[in-house]
Length: 556
Image (cartoon, rainbow, N blue to C red; front, side):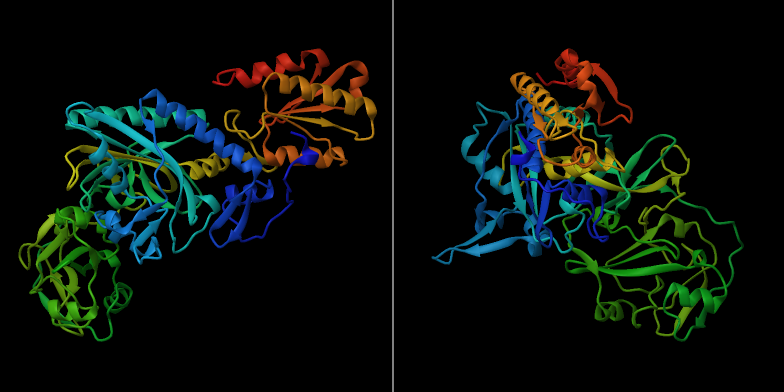
């Protein structure tokens, strides 16, 4: 491709509000343009990157016998209504009606479409182990679309489902997909963590997430540097802290006017937040429950859902529910005499001595409270882990880091109205594109890995008006094209420095510069990933390019 004919406009800078680096560089390199809040057009160079990633995914899917299909972007609402996910994504689903007032969803991602195909097309007697997928743009009305393609309203995703007659078949499919994902990430030059997503009580899914560490906050994960155990923060288990042993003191009810929050109480009692146990009231469908954690802790709602052991819609109770359960205004809830269906008590609270809780009476708190003597509940791990907590596996301190999820594999098991044992396997194509940039860039721009780069080589004549430089550049360009190598000829009437900056910004793996040394039969050969350049003989160019591009890759 000749640069003079390409639909590409690079930018030297973008607005300061743009983050993360992948978002900035995709805009600056002319690979993506914003059309509306959270909605983007991908330009020719960006499309080539996406197509290269998709090619890798398709090859790995073919290797494990996963077949490609294409589903309609318009889905009848009655089919979607079979899904438990309809409630979860209710506000994010685009809906339309046709001229006959029949309702449809647009571009959503729901397993019922695949289940419908399986019910109609798979015979349990013949095809007892089937795995199929599609790669497609999905549309979701994200509340806060941000970070460019990492969290946008339209995104490209690979979605696969397996259907087996038993759990043994599911386990085989699950493990094959896990290895395929690892191969995909390796070929995209991504360092990815396999993160335990836990067993979600609301869906009864065992799942594994594939994530990269990031400076931006998409999701929080807990990581143990000692034993390398990694899990999503909401489900991370840690060793509970044990308070110093104290002799039990007499239970007292103290008037605490206007002291509703932990901060208020710390000041009122002149102590620290770990001397309190807070009681949070929730509604789970038609039930009311209370969860107790230490005053300096937060409740993990995912752990609470798992403890309920059923598909419950969990939300904070309103003030009316709180008053009915406690007899008090919000801010004075406590475990003694509370009227709830469940009282979940974090195991750290059991280990505390003479602590302070709400008095279930407006303006009052109890002091010198002790578990078992003064109240009892269902014990468990209901707290969110924090930096420095002790790893449940090895006992060493854990770290909390920001991460971006690129994909997941889940064991769905047997779904309602479906005779198969199912697995679900998601992979964000446009997220992978952004993640590659997050892990492969420098101050000059993108550093694309060879396999996903939009073009592999860029040939630059240093002086546009130098006839020999232009002619030699043209000859190199044609020879590389004859070798089926994606190559750009920068034939613009621009200064060499401008061309170099654009080449670095776009991240082309190899830059060949035809300059003054062409008089000696030599040209500059530079890898985008290296700072230094080489001077090589003109006749060695093709061999040198092939050696670099095809080494340890599956190109050619």
